[in-house]
Image (cartoon, rainbow, N blue to C red):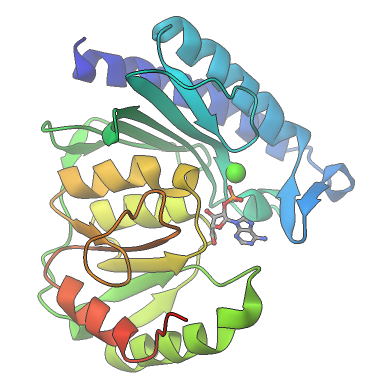
Length: 265
Ligand code: 2AM
Ligand code: CA
């Protein structure tokens, strides 16, 4: 299979789902929100977009299985699995904010080999395949070359459940505020990672994430020259529920800043 050709087809599939979400955003009202759990929002738009993606990806690569946020498809593939978040940034979407996107990754064995993130309101499609670089709308992208945390803009996500860790999270946040250009919280982990890849942010950290929030972003950051880990170095940052992404140069400083206040029980 030619991964790069496959990736261009996945670009089209992500754009199609993204355009559906964009179209729905014009008329969406909040009475259509359903709750999957506390603070866990979903709507018919998430579900419909996911159903479209699953159908299109299934005909593209019939032997692949699925790990998806809305669980439209749950069968696992022997070699290949798609990891999909049809709408990352649902809270933004439901409030009329434009930062949301479609996130699609392909995992071969345990390794991500393809990632596509499409932000329909900005018409930005970020994508990468293993060993072939990272791209935004057809142009190759690279992480920022800022050498130090003091020259960096850092992205994060606030805790929205498991609030027992909020106090130590806020201490880490305070430490980044005091040592960087500033901290941003845009509400889509997939776009946070894409923005590290394209050099808008130098770093990103968040805990309590799912594989579908980060899988596509991970390979896009890697292929753009960035670095990934858990809050301590290494680890399974795809299924491990916490992630640090950086332009590489500030990675150690980020881990040191987190380690000042982050305690595991
Ligand atoms: P989602 O929109 O697909 O659920 C940002 O903090 C990340 O956490 C996003 O990728 C978002 O993915 C996820 N998330 C889930 N519920 C959230 C909530 N209530 N508030 C903020 N982020 C949430
Ligand atoms: Ca989602």
